[in-house]
Image (cartoon, rainbow, N blue to C red; front, side):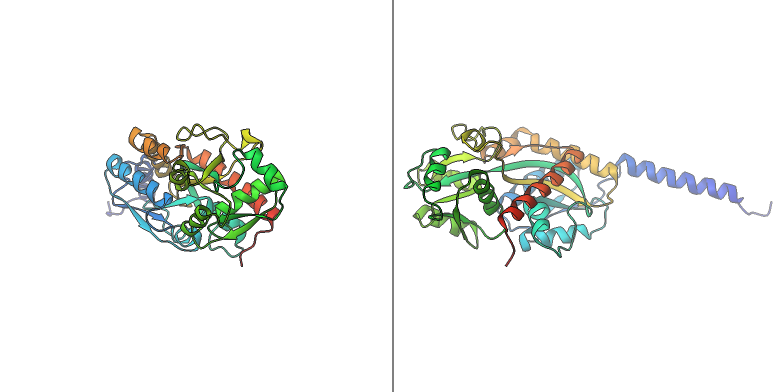
Length: 328
C-alpha cells in the first residue's frame, strides 16, 4: 500500500466524527462546561434582578456550573437585550426578558437594535407580576366600580402616576381608560419611587403598578387597593378582587420574567435550560418567595414562552396605538 487513506474512508471518518459531535451536543451532556452569564437589563434590587438571582442560585446547584447575573441597565432593558442578541448562540449568555424589552420597546422604537422574536430563542417564562390598582385614601371610592363612576363624573380631574412615558404602569392605566371610558390625566415620573411618594401625599390620586411595590403601603392603610390585573385572584392578596370581576371584564395587565438565549442556540441546550429553570422557580423555597410578593409562578416550556411573547407584542402594540403614546 502507498500509505494513502482512501477518500471513502476519509469521508466515513469525517461523517463519524461529525455524528459523534452532534450526538454529544444534542444530548447536552457536555453543557455547561464553563460559567453561564445571565444579563439583566436593569439595576440590582428590582423584580427583574431578584428573580434572576434566585433562579441563578438554583441553576448553579442543579447544573454544576456558576450562573452569574450581570446587570447592564439602560434604555428600559434594550442595552442588555442587544448585548445578548449579538452574543454567540452557545448557551453561555442568557437574557432576562420582560414586557419592556420584548413588547413595549419593540412597539415604540422604530430603530431598535434587535428583534424580540427573530433574535432570541425563548427558554422559560418563569413568572408574571400582575399590576395592582391603588388609590389615595382620600378618594371616595372603595371599589373599582365606584372609582369608575367617580372618574366619569370628573373627566380630566383625576391624575394618575407612572414611572415614565411608555412604562408598563402607563400602559396598564391606558388600557383601563380605554376599557372603562374614563379620562385620567397622566403624570409621568423619572422613577417609581417619586411616583409612589406623590401618590402617598395625594399629589396624584391613582396608580397601576406591580403589586409587590404597593402592598406595603396598602397594608399600612396609606393607599387603598381596589383591584389586581390578573384573571384570577392572587393568593398573597386574596381579599383584593380582580379588575375583571370588578366591572372591567377581561382586564389583564402586568409584568413578566423569562430567560431567552441568542437565536440559533442548540435545541438540546434550550430544552435542558427550560427544564432546569422551570424546576427552579417551582421549587418550594423560590415559589413561596415569589408568591409572597404577589407574583404568579409559571415555569413554561420554550414553545409556551414563544407564544406568550407574540401575544404580548400584539397586546401592547394595540394599547400603544390606541392611546397614541410616543417617545419624546
